[in-house]
Length: 342
Image 1 (cartoon, rainbow, N blue to C red):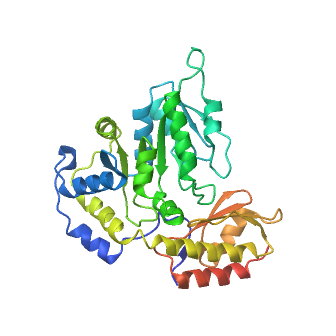
Image 2 (cartoon, helix red, strand yellow):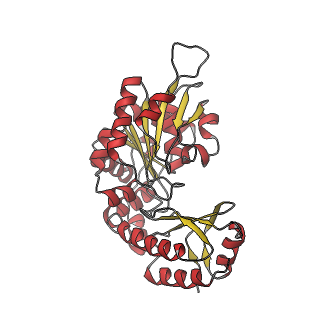
Image 3 (cartoon, rainbow, N blue to C red):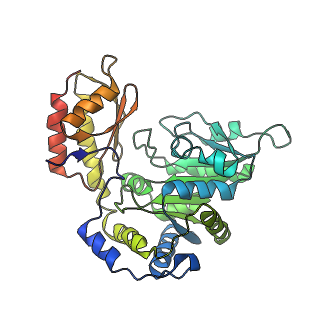
């Protein structure tokens, strides 16, 4: 029987309908701006969020790193939460690609406040301090357990950024999960942030791809940085077609992933080896094990029963529901979880 892969929502495989859309995509050379399917995706995403322009890239890491590079100059400082993907899981890219230092903001499950931003900004009159230049918000918050940001707080952060001369970038790798959960709209977020990164290969189920959104001037510079990083693709319309199909068919169904994650989280919370489950708001389940249970051993025991997940700390485990996890997979997972011993 095929393993139940809860390691990430990046493990999804294109559906037959998505493969068909990819095979039938109209193609051209995207570096020349001549791939009609890429152009359609970029135009559609920009219009959806009410932003001026968009850029299709291979990955969310690339769209985040391009955004940092365009917003900053070497020696500038980026403000984010210490578990933020842009800092923790992008290979030191902010430092290596853009020469930026990083300051961590105090946060609750990955969410910080406008007051925290204001308190952290360096005085630009002092030459010995780095210029605080960019704030990065991640929605949903991966290490927070799929936490959803309150858009009202992000608007307060934007107001503070505008007053203090900072950019505000939204790492929206799972933004559609957040919008399904809280009812906010793409236009709401487009009005709130200077730039947004949208990943197509997580909850939306495309095999690859991410879209960066911003002003015409911002995306013009982003296109130059993409080329420098090796992200200029040629007949990329086959990949863009997967993103278009995902937008048409895979957004509303994210609610199913959330319900399945909640079912799994509830069962985990009832097991004797579980110390705590973070509130399950979207499709990510993070739980802490009791002191006598080692996370790596726990994950290995689950894998031996056919359930794949990640240890993200000595006593902490993450599971993620997605397009390829149906109710039968959840039922099987629950049966296996109930068999686990401390």
